[in-house]
Image (cartoon, rainbow, N blue to C red):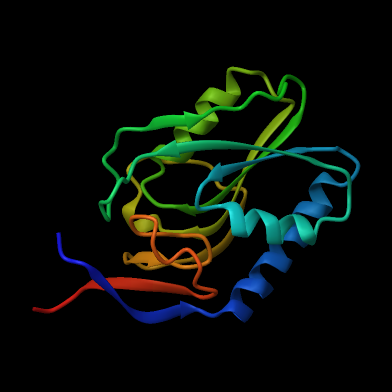
Length: 178
C-alpha cells in the first residue's frame, strides 16, 4: 500500500469552529433541561465532541463506544468490531450519538441498533461531516455540520492508519504519484 499525501485543506479550523457552534446552538435548543447522555464514537469523534461540549451550557453526561471498521484501509471493511462498549444505564435517557463523519452509515447504524435495545427515551445522531455519496445504509442524522465530497478525510481527529489526527483543519488525502 502506498503512503498517501495530504493535498488540500477542505475546511479550515475557523469553518469547523463556526459549524460546531451552530450545532451546539441547535442541540442546546433541543436538550436544555433534559440531562442527555452524549455517546461519542471513538476514536475520530474525540476532538469534535470535546469542542461541542464546551459550547453546551447545561448538565449532560458523556460516554464513549469504540468500534473499528477501517484498519489501515481508506474504505470500510463493512465488518464492525466493538473494541469498547457502553456501560452507562441508557433506559429512559435522552441519548445523542456524536460522530465525526457518517460515511457508509454502517458504524452509526450498528451503534444505533445496539442502543435502541437499551430503550432510551430518545435517540438522535449529531455528525460533524456527512458523506452521502458513500452511504450503504440509510441512517437518520438529526444534526449535520458539513457535507463533504467523496474523498478520504483526515485532521481534526480523523485519521488514516492513526496518522494525521493532530491536524487542526480537515484535509483530504490522495495517493502519491510514483
